[in-house]
Length: 280
Ligand code: IPD
Ligand code: CA
Ligand code: CA
Image 1 (cartoon, protein in one colour):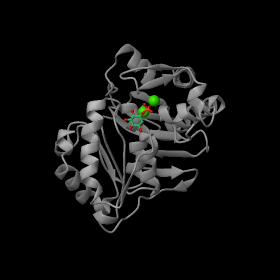
Image 2 (cartoon, protein in one colour):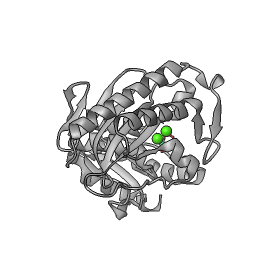
Image 3 (tube, rainbow, N blue to C red):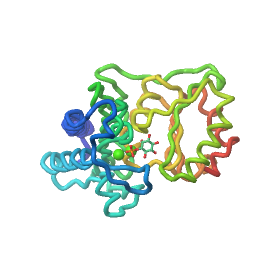
Image 4 (cartoon, rainbow, N blue to C red):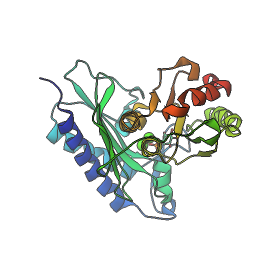
C-alpha cells in the first residue's frame, strides 16, 4: 500500500489548525491563570487545563473521521490511563500512529504568555514521517515530511551555522519533577560559561522549531515524552539539525533529546557530557 506523506502532512496541518483555533479562542491573555481552571498531574507544577483536554478531544474526533482506524497517542489520554510516556510504536511499515500534544507549553498558556503550540505528528514504526507545529497566538505553522524538508509558512528552513561553541545559543527545558529539575539546572549552570547564552521558552515543540528556524543554535532537554518531540524533532532534522532522540546516545543519558546545528554538534555534545548529562 505505501505511505503517502503529503496526505499525512495535510491531515496533520488541518487537525493542528483546528485545535489551534480552539486554543486561541480559549486563551485569556495576560494573567490568564487567575481565570482558568486547572488540575495537577505528576507534580503540583505539572498542570492540565480544560483547554488541553478540549484540544485533544477535537483532534481525536477529526482524526477518527479523516483517518479511521489509525491509533492516536495523545498526552492527556495517555497520562490519564497511565500509558507509557514513550508511547507505543506502530507496528508494520504501512501502519500509522498519530502522536499529539494538544498544548505544548501549558504553563505558558495558563499565564497568558504566548509561547505555546499544538503539535501533531504521524509516525511509522516509531519514526516521524510528517508533522506540524502551530502556534495559536501568531498562526505560525512549522511543518515537515521525511525527506521533504522543513517549512515555516511556505519558507524552506535551514539551521544556523555558528562558528564555534562560544557563540552557540543553547535552548533548554526542565522536567516537572523537582529533584530532576535541580540536576538539569546543575548541568546547564556548568555549561553556561562555555556558550553564548541560554534560552528557556517553555515549549519543547517550539524549541525544536526554533532550532529549525535558526532562532537558536541548539536545544537539549532530558525526559521529554514522545508527544513533546514527535513533530518538532522531524522539523529540526529536516532543516538540517543533527538530532539525538531519547535512547540514541547513552553518553548524554538514557532520555536526552539534542537538536543542534551541525557546525557545533560534536562540541555541544561533548560539553554536555562533560557537564554531567549522563547523570541528569
Ligand atoms: C512541557 C514543555 C516544556 C518542557 C517540558 C514539557 P507541556 O510540555 O514542552 O517546555 O520543558 O519538559 O513537559 O507539559 O507544556 O505539554
Ligand atoms: Ca509537551
Ligand atoms: Ca501538553
